[in-house]
Image (cartoon, rainbow, N blue to C red; front, top):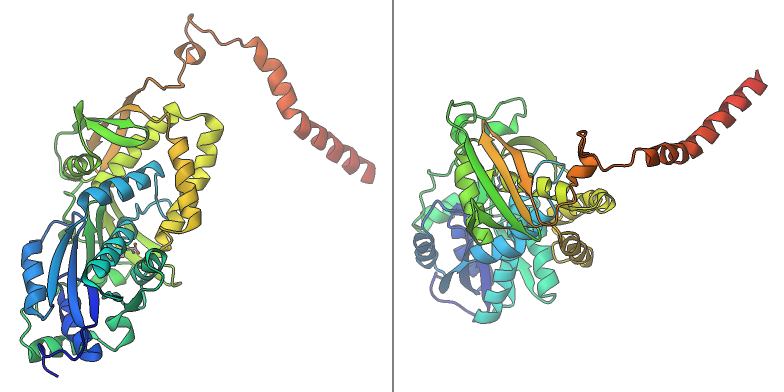
Length: 410
Ligand code: ARG
């Protein structure tokens, strides 16, 4: 069978990145299954290579159709927005950059499968990572009868074989150009792994960063005021913005100050510990500002409980369960908990950090009269005496009992 003589009209929708693996996968899948391949390249704000060039490349590699899905606004408002409301940080640090993009891509793949009459979706993930799980579990949740092909994982498409395949067929892809790193990037941040980073004692070098400047380079600090409405950003320095725009601005401004770099060893869902270097300037700046506004506007017990929900939410999303019933139910909680999270936070961006320096809100629970130590104090200190006594009563009773028993045992 040659490239263009297909034996069947079955169609497969492939998540296409434009790299070696997915370029080879087009012909590989066609050869292995006789199906026609529809390539779908997703724009999740990754910048870098021109997506029209990538779209054309898929056609040159034998795809029968090739489309670019612009998912930026949807990704910003339906995925990054909720992650911000959840202050989502896996293992208290990682803002879920790749984990957030997989479900929106899965949704676009399923939509393309419906448009192009495909019953199968394909991806280029290996069997060692989280992304295979996120794609496949996401696709199954959206279209339970869809079949999945994973040629890199399941049909022996190793790197050497992929290079040989590309050379044999003169695919328009420079096999020597492949970077030593595996990189995944989008609007919410950038992840870099493999190469010399696999030795976890090796420090990251400046070369691997693209979204952030070196935080230790001397420069003037930048002051920014971020406005939120019900937990999502709606203004920057007083100008109304979409969520997408807010993230783009903060990526630039916080990135220029080296904010949001992160080097960590993380627990993958498949059980492996792996080392990843991240840079997420917009995400980290926005989460920092958002947490600060929550401190002022969310009632104490709700805030304490929300922190537990946040951790669980981040784990579910990391583990590929974006569309799961528990995650959806937690979203309802987060929406309700964010009702009062409107107002503004002023921050200084400098030296790799985003530091809040001011907050104001119509929904503030901060009461100057109650908090002040000045003469305007409205707090009735007389109430504290009885409160403290009753609050400590259970511990006091238990301690007295323990001492009594200890001395009678002597
Ligand atoms: N470890 C991250 C996650 O599972 C990122 C995965 C993709 N990373 C990469 N460098 N290709 O969410």
